[in-house]
Length: 311
Image (cartoon, rainbow, N blue to C red):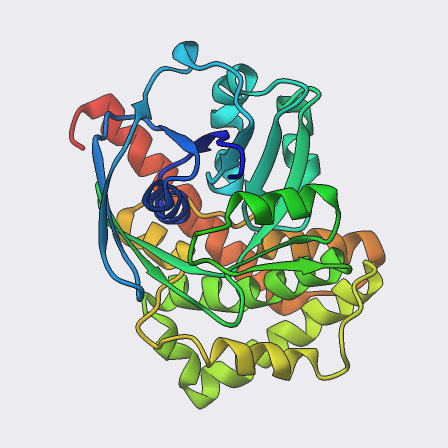
C-alpha cells in the first residue's frame, strides 16, 4: 500500500475545492484545507458522480505545521496572502504544487516557501464554485493537470493516484505553460468583458478577434522560447471550442462576484514578455487596459464598502 501523506490545500475556491474534494473522496492521504472560514463538508459535482465529503479545515495559520505536500490553489495575484500559511506548512522536505495560471509559477512563490521544492502545475479542468460548500468539476480536454516529466512531477502524479483526474507528464513544460496562457489570454478577457460564458467565443466576430489576439501572443511566446506551431492560434481556438459553451472562466466568475481579476498573470504576462522581447502587442495591451480598469474599480468599491459599512 502506498504511503499515506499529509496534504494541505491552500485556497478553497473552484480549483482548490475540486482537488480537495477529489482527494478526500479517494481517502488515500490526510487532507487539511486552509480557509478563511470554518467548513466541515464539501459537495463535489463531477461527471463520475456527486460526492459529499467531510473536511478538516484550518482557519488560523498559527495552528499549522509542516506537511508532505502543499497544493497552492489561490489566484496568482492572491499569492502574497498565502505567505503565513506557506511559512508554517513548508519544511525542506515539503513539495509545493502551484496550481495557478501564468508562466512563472516557481518565481512567484520562491521567496515564500523556504527550502521546499516547487512543482509547477498547469490546470486544465474547469472548476466552478456553486456555494461555499459546493463545487463543480468539468473535464476539459484529454488531461486535467500537467507537470514536468521529472522526479517531482512523477511524485505529484503518484499523489493523485486513485483520483479521477488525468495528469500529463511533459518533457516540454515551458511550451505547455504558454499554450495554457494562450487559452487564458482569449477566453478569460472576452468572457469577463462581455459578461458571457464561453458560448460567446462561437460568434464569428469574436472568433476573429480572438485569433488576432492570439497571433500577437504566439509571436511573444516563440520569442520567449516556447515551441509553438505556425497555426498555434487556430489550434488554440479549436481547443477552446471543444469546451462546453456553458463553461465560465475565472475572470468571468470574478467579475460577477465583484472580485479583482488575475489580469497581471494572464494578459499582463503577455504584454510584459512582449516588452522584454521588443514585440508590439496592441490588442493585448488594449485588453489589459480595460481589464485593469474593471479590476481596479472592484478594489475601490470594496474599500469604500469597508469604510462605510455598506457591503
